[in-house]
Amino acid sequence: MSTLYPQNNATRMTLDLGGVWDFRFQGDSAWQPVAVPASYNDQSPDPRFRNAAGVVEYRRRITVPAGWKGLRVFLRFDGVAHSARILLNGMEIASHRGGFLPFEVDLDAHLQPGETGELLVEADNRISHRTLPIGVEGGNAFFGSDNPGIPSVEAGKQKQREQGINLPAFDFFNYTGIQRPVRLCAVPKAHIRDITLVPALSGEVRYAVETSGGSPADVRIQVMDAESRIVAIASGAEGTLHIAQPHLWEPWPGTPYLYTARVFFGDDVYDQPFGIREVRVEGTRFLINGKPFRFHGPCKHEDSAFHGRGMDPCLNVTDIGLYHWLHANCFRTSHYPYAEEMYQLCDREGIVIVDETPAVGMWADEDYGWGLGEYHRQVLQDMIARDRNHPCVVMWSLGNEPDTDTYPDRAYDYWRPLYDLAHQADPQNRPVTLVGCQNRYDRDRIIRSMDVVLINRYYGWYNLSGDLETAKFAFRQELDWWETQGKPVILSEYGADTIAGLHGAVAEMFTEEFQVAFYEAMSECLDERDFVIGEMPWNFADFATCQGPMRAGGNRKGLFTRDRRPKMAAHWFRKRWAEMD
Ligand code: BDP
Image 1 (tube, protein in one colour):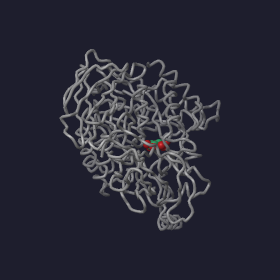
Image 2 (tube, rainbow, N blue to C red):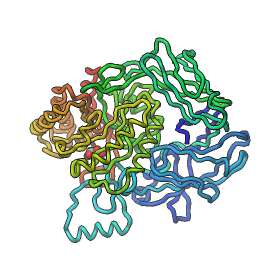
Image 3 (cartoon, rainbow, N blue to C red):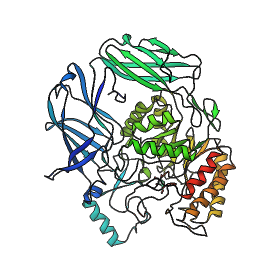
Image 4 (spheres, rainbow, N blue to C red):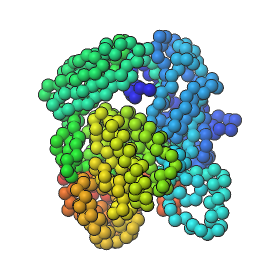
């Protein structure tokens, strides 16, 4: 399939199929309304919307415009979680595994211009040891110690398993459904399939264009600057463009200058935005355009009221506005690739992204024996293919917090080929990482072998709880060890659950004062170390999780509440990061 984001222009057309669709749980007879794109889970008070595991059905009618004769017509799904089967007039025409990356469904053989058909999308929200993210059956999935060994509790867990209950092995609500846009698209029969751009600071841009039909030699390409002036031209399917006195794409607060590569091929045309910037690791430095870059910005989730994980441009713009307000310059797409519109916005706004696969929950996978590898490779390749032209993406994350220390050699053998694959698959050869959880860092082999070491740490919260002086002592001890490794390190998660409005003259856990004290303590340790090149507090905003004894209405580690009101810690970071600009 083509990885190009759908475009409307002189030769390409898209019809947005967003709106209210018919919806039902498979096996039900009645249909009810559900909005697309959005997670369905919060759209009804019926508890099945939040809890049921299995297949749901979405239905609507689609008509291919009569004027689209002679074109290639297809559907483009930006993300259906976690897997989808697509039926037209009762016949299966496609299926797709994985909820966070796009897929296309060709309609040419099924629906002619002028014809109408019934489109049915089956979405399956079940998660297991064979999906990414990972699910487990029964018990208290994310919150480990659920009274193991007690006969009556074990009997209860067995009963849950028999009921097919599946629970996330990860700490965010298992939002699902048609969460991203669906479009009906038309492109010329002979068309541009793919565009790869590899810019260098000199202004040389290597390019490759993949085409379908026609003769690839007929490709022409024009680069336009931000004022739409043509600054370079070339022809042929592969080659090099030369831009004189190039403007660089710089992270915020610099200028994230964007060029557009306009590609012509027969009747087709496609505008691919790009930025000129280089990313490199040198010693313990992370260089963007040759200058040391310090990452500072909270990790995110795609999460909000009503929409769940649904793509919401208003929310994206609001969030990135708050990143500017915070003087933040980055985030990690914890714990899955986000909707493409967010990367477009970050290209434009100069916010740097660490792009992560949905490989989360693999702490339950300590022996790596479930045969996920092939699928994991596919997801990694698809993510890189989708996102490789974005200047905002500066690093790939293979996954979050797998178990890497129970069997360090097996973990190494599982993750190292993925690391190599990421380097091979990315024409820009960005640095690659795997995010490590708080484990036996002295036993683990794989995390320390990454280009940049990303570690999640909860000193003072999950361990040494509330005792920030000792937390600092312990964290410093670990940092002493990392210092001997000679790698750049980013603290990629650290945080404290905080109930907005809960205060205390003494800074105790869950108060806003404690959250500030926690970040003060951790920052003190970070600021002493040159090899620490970034800090990514957990999390930007409070977010929904599955139920559990440690989650009061979700995860409360946000610097902002779920409706994006700043807690004291947001103000604290705003001051700290303003000084780093
Ligand atoms: C880390 C996970 C993250 C959780 C966080 C927490 O990477 O997904 O939400 O802990 O417990 O282990 O708040």
